[in-house]
Image (cartoon, rainbow, N blue to C red):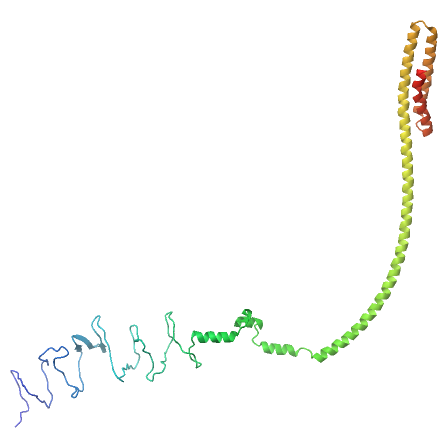
Length: 362
């Protein structure tokens, strides 16, 4: 009869494989007899005999003395020791997948191995749910844009801008300059069409020009004829007026010249007369002085002759003195009083006076 339960109080040891066909409940730890160094030691399961599930409580999983897995208040923590790296690795065609019902948080800098890329599971572009901040860094090695939503590299943008400018002059190679040239009119074409619609047709303008020119020619001819007639009449009137004015001016100037000549002649004669009169007066005054001097001299001579006792000489001297004195004084007085006589009389008086010294010498 098979035993359903046995109890080993002192422990047991077996050197052969043992099979436990039911649950094995342990009241202690399961420990290997050696401390494995990764090469020697014992395994829990094998590549052909694996454990299905491993149930752990709040305990942890240690590998090579490092706690790498633990449950911390509802969060499973996979970690490494300080300064120790943690690498999750798959090989071959294996894929490492991070799956989350909400978000996957990366609490550090995410670095890709050189030459590696970020794509979706199909190797296509990754969709970002928000803006991407490049932190002032550049995006390099961008391909040429083909789709409307593709990002453009600098070479593509430069080529498009150059194609748009297409050698335009510097004053019109920007949209603002073009807008200014269009008078900032958003509907410039419509405005121009409306403005051109107000313009007259060429045939109409030509017809109007012909009619206007013909009318203008008639008006010009009429005005030219009238101007010629008026100019001729005006010239005749002005010539007659000029002739009349010239005659009057000549007569007036002749009369003025005649009056000026008469005035000049009168003035000249008055000046000559006044000069002769002044000259005669001055000479008469001088003759009067000379006559007095002669009289004084004669008187002195007479006195001298008298003192010498020559009565004859005294009588001659007295007569001579009286003759010189009376005659010359009378002549000088007469000349001085006759200041209004003619120039011939003045000249005669002047000659008489100038002869007085000759008489005295005789």
